[in-house]
Length: 275
Image (cartoon, rainbow, N blue to C red):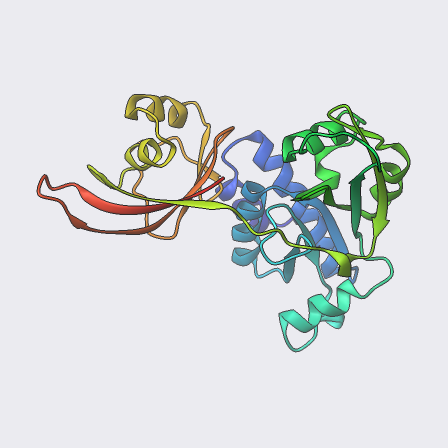
């Protein structure tokens, strides 16, 4: 790691966990510079955000892929120069077509004749984690009526196929499926129009999640709030149109529109909450 990389590493590391993660990312990028095609484990949105900033600053050729464009958890892909095509789309398409591409799909169905409740994302995640699987080897869970699709590292697909037998006390069967069978469920959202005293983070969090502003400030101060997938502990941080706010355990909201004032000088906002 050269001095420029070390400087960038410190710039984008807010804590020791970030620093260790970004050091691994830089190691992968350096392997690609030596002519290797390299992949990371799945990154969460925060990790992807800081990795993307770091790699852009250093001019590293990289891609992120979680199986579909809106994926929340993604692999980092580092491509040597000789494998690059004319466009990013062509390069990513060529890499996806390789037999050693590490992204795989596991489909999980309720067993026939099972009298089962509707299983949720939390149910599936809990069942997979209870098998001793590391979170970094598993991507998004796509929940459908009667079944789910789980994006995983390829070497994890057979493990889930052989061991995932029950989800929330419901008998299931799991099997590997081609990535082309991936189905993207319609994301359910709820739109809310309201007014806020200002576009400070604490005010938008309070309105977006329907909690008192004092509680929003507590959540922000304790590191539970993420702005654009980065932890933000500053209650007065301005929120801009299009930005996503995540509150650990309570989901995400997007500030889709802000502008205009009420008679009491409060700002009109439109918030989209994912449900």
